[in-house]
Image (tube, rainbow, N blue to C red):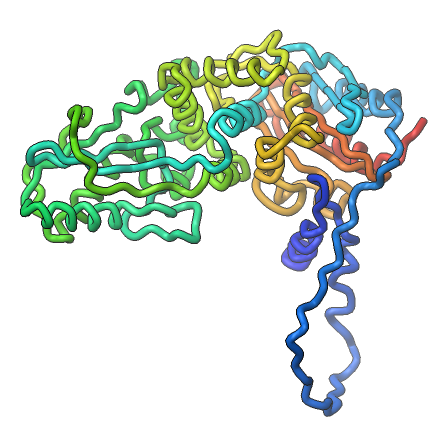
Length: 465
């Protein structure tokens, strides 16, 4: 049943127009798959072929005059959540914005700075896309100075250990390919034996945020600008203690296999000035990389993206520098950052404080007429309710399935959702909701209350008063 429903929702997401993924009557997409009647076969004429291409019907856009929901009705949803016993002593902040007009329909403590958990990633994603562009790629290179080859990390943490796959995002670039290209260039210069160094100095060297709590090692890798597929690790298996060195050692093995002797052990150090580039490989475009990190809410990838943003825009490539770079880009793009406290890029730090209004405004801009490539890319990268990412198991068999896009957020005492929803009347709304400060162990009840009291009713809303 779940696979059939997932297939139906996948088909439904093809009906996209103006950033709206409608649910095309999902349960009716797979009717009558089983029958009690016995099979009956009738001989049919062999079909004839044609060279005519089928004409695709255009997807239906959102209704131009879809009614705006009643602000008082929506405010009642927010109040129901705030007073739900399942959130206990948690403080609730809600902002709901009508995308077409920019009007804020719900302001329930929307300006109160609260811990956003992974909704924080929305701010990082907007800033990175806006500053660097959706087509930006991350380069990993090998350079030569004397008889020393230096592997230079450029922020790609989805590298394949051997061959890359140009059709993939994870493993798009491969260390084995880089090693073989490097070996070819070395042999052309008559070099068959080298020493190997690792240059991971793109980042400032501090791999763990002082604002993260002890025990979060299960949820984030040491932050370095070079890793073999960081998504291959899970909270159960843990992350390598030194991912960049692990990648360098894999490169050394591949270089030796390609016929170039590597003497001694891999050392660390910045590539010398004037070193000549031997070979380089590039990641998938930033738009595709962000889709991986946002769908899975990957802390490691998002922190690396923040560090890359800082390095590319003149800030220290550190946790604090990444936070500064994100804030600066938001302000440059006209967002009001009053009340914003950023300590990291991923939202793992409890000390992050973000007003729900700021998050909703980023979503409204993304979905609106002036969202541009940055906004459309960000929206596309968000999980879809009951379909994929961190929303794949939420809103099953509800009106919200397929209508809700959101970045989820979960910490021990904070839960959030930030995204867009299309009402039953076809009105596109942007929203952010944060519940912060409930008792430890209260995450699941608070999340269920958020879904049932606010987001579900928003999707079901045919409420004009």
